Image (cartoon, rainbow, N blue to C red; front, side):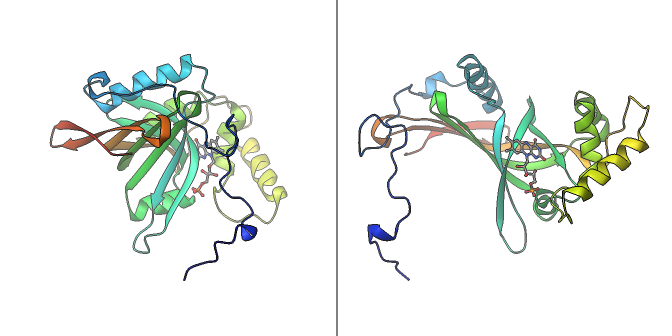
Length: 232
Ligand SMILES: Cc1cc2nc3c(=O)[nH]c(=O)nc-3n(C[C@H](O)[C@H](O)[C@H](O)COP(=O)(O)O)c2cc1C
């Protein structure tokens, strides 16, 4: 069914937030991207862009949208997380893998996608691939770097489950604090840890004027990475 296009029905219409040109969208002019600029692998290219984002003062460039999709209903869900590790195998995030929605999605379908947006650079990176869990030994290494409150919180929070109220969460935190009282080293919960997205497709996007952006995509073909330019 077609809906009425009457502007009066729209709460928001063609916003131009941040634009210095009234009535027109912000134009992206920070850079350009050519195939000759790219590193041989997408993880090396990501590392280069991540370092440039840090140098440019992008706030928390590790912030990323993680999208998952449950099967058989095919309903997608997406949430913001932090990418905590990058190696040649892929992109690692840490989360609850017991009770959370994303854990349920990944249990039925290991495919996931990550999207980074670095506003100050006018750059986006999209990653698609299979997910795999890190071992608890690997997860323990990162878990040990977290402040005590966050380590306790990982144990105490049945992530994404309905709570009776804030008090229930606080009661759970107290219980876990008692359990580990006087104990500096806390074991990582078996239901919590690292998930690696092993990339099969990675797209680097550089904003350009008039929405004629540069999009270069790495696609895994056997052991090789094929790079192609996509139309914006
Ligand atoms: C900036 C930001 C960073 C976040 N980082 C994480 C994270 O690293 N791991 C995590 O499990 N949740 C993180 N969250 C919370 C998630 O967005 C989400 O609420 C939670 O993981 C439950 O999602 P789910 O119900 O889809 O599984 C973060 C939220 C924000 C806004």
